[in-house]
Length: 206
Image 1 (tube, rainbow, N blue to C red):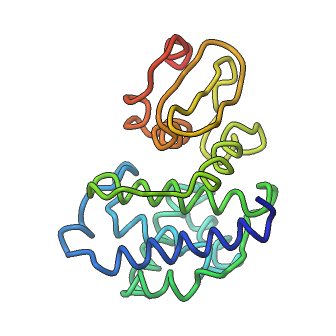
Image 2 (cartoon, rainbow, N blue to C red):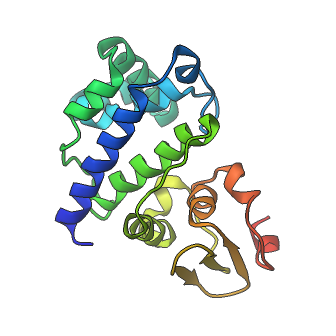
């Protein structure tokens, strides 16, 4: 996929998630996501942060948090929830925004963000993601690329990652295999994904 195709995929994923979230009950919004300590509503607000919070405002949030990105992120997400009570509508309205974080391989970072955080929301609610395979491959390639390691944490390089439900593999060493969704979660530090993997390489991950 070229950059224009990836940007189009990002917009589509945002709209798909917005359409889904527009149907959520209060109980679903309050359900704990796969992001530790965050509800599904919190994750939706987080997805909006880079689309509605200016770079100066984000810098101010970092200053107020004394350089702690996690605290700044929480504060910005809380402000977004207060400012945009209709989160699905806001995400749909901003779906075509082409913001990319500096030094993150262009649109591959925001595509990863929307797909993985979409799983953070869908999984606890028992809703299938049905992400197109070409988008999943782009995200998996991004996650095993050393350039992306600062985004979700360092990925072990001494194993071979193998998807069992599509034609994708990366790395060299003992095999770690599972569904592409499980790999997406494991490569971004979600324990739920790790629990679904198999192969001799698992001992390298522990």
